Image (cartoon, rainbow over all chains, first blue to last red; front, side, top):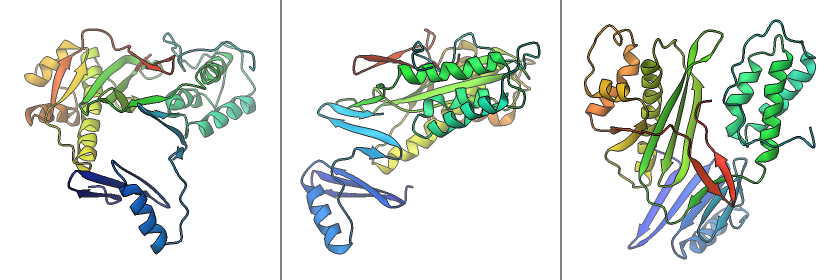
Length: 70
Length: 238
């Protein structure tokens, strides 16, 4: 069981939050991401880096029809 | 090296590295410098890991032939700067594993090399290439050990997927050796197989518990993934 993976489900919506040391990556199929950012920034002092571009030494490109790792 | 030719693979398919006593020695500082720089790169380019470590085994007494293999990695890096892994949105979440081996790939002590890779739908999620820890006495044994490695990784990936709420039943493991598949279905302890270490038989247990199902891949594994009009060839074992 992964202790750093958090999943929250609402009806048909889902949000996945993966924590890695001092980084958090998250994704959802709805507006839950924005709510999550608002809650986190209200509680902790942390910057929002925007769309995922770089993680663990890998360049990530999010495209309409898939994800490209480089 | 700046205007060298590009290559599609980090190691040549017919590359059999040896101590090569008779060959011209090269400056060991330069050779170690090359290995060190490439090792630094492995964090963001894990696909060269095996090739770099292969070269690193000859650091004590590097020869011209070893240096050539190291330089080929540089040519590969030059040829693959705009290549990456493609994970399409519309792919399914069926996990499948592939295993292959290179019998006596390491000439110094006749150890074989295992190669496995795992696909989730059509995206590559994990791959492994490693010299086996024991000496395999037949191609079947080498393939059997490789399939065992692949099987262990499938179990790990299944647990990982379980965290995301994906429950998979039987996962196909593709293997290009008929004897291995027959051996898992009916592990007869005849003289050719009884010496295979007990731990490598874990594959049989997984098969019986229906965690994996073995499939025969008739073609030699040598498939390509199209990535932004470039081809990335995954060669499991050279």
